[in-house]
Length: 133
Image (cartoon, rainbow, N blue to C red; front, side, top):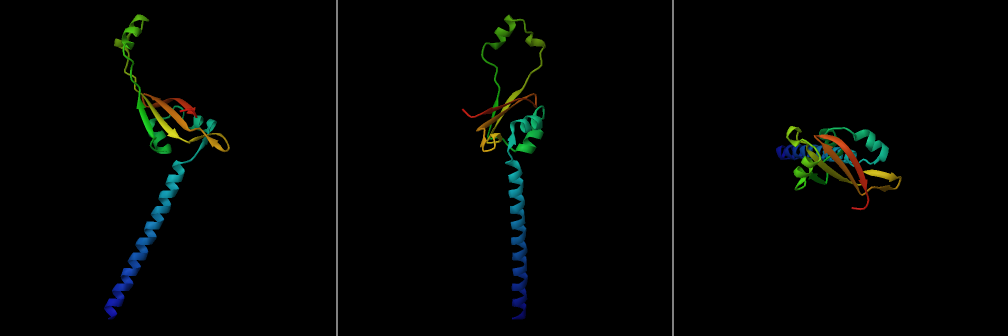
């Protein structure tokens, strides 16, 4: 009988410890998620993220809700040749747009619906804020 009581006490201690650990991990996860959901003023956002790399953006803002890659329009090569651009000697440029929702405030109570960050060769080159998409 005493052996069974000791086993129950040990099991209860283990369950309490497991519950405490799970609770602490949950709270830590919520704090981490809350830091990812921070909002910025326009100036704060521009000063913080202009010229930064994709790694910096993803570590501070998390994954975007949408990504798009730039595609060269059909016939662009012919047009560029007509205006004097030498495409054979130019380096490949990778352009990618990342989109975030409700990230930047335009007044104390309202955020832009969407923020577009444009990367050129892995660096932020353009930031735009939209409400009409």
